[in-house]
Length: 149
Image (cartoon, rainbow, N blue to C red; front, side, top):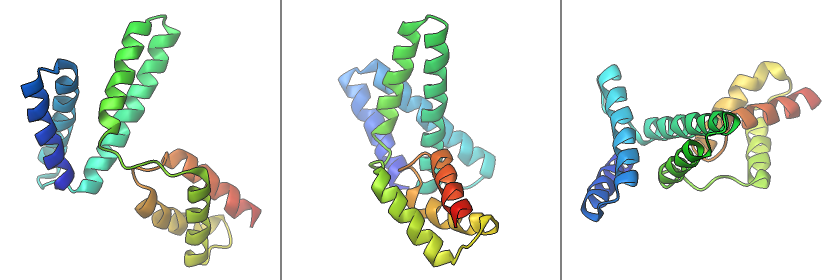
């Protein structure tokens, strides 16, 4: 709940500062959190908030690509600014070396020897890398490591 509280406090700060663009993005984030709470009928955890934020960043990245291909750079730039506002709440991304070390540790912990063990490995890696790495890239790296084993 601490992350949600931080976002709410930042909304108040943006209101006081008159930062309409940041305020709009924060309100959108809070609306997504509220929607998740209504859908599940329970308070969201920090992990849930991180998942929502990752999803929102991914959506905006894809939208920015679409706008650029559609020759609408002003809209792409707006999406990229929203990404920067959202990224403030995400933890520091893992470096490639740290990610590879995390994957190797998860493989050893799970005793993984083949692709059949990918679910176990991904479960361990996801717990540590949530919000800090693109899970699609993590999955590809785990597949590569397990298929080579």
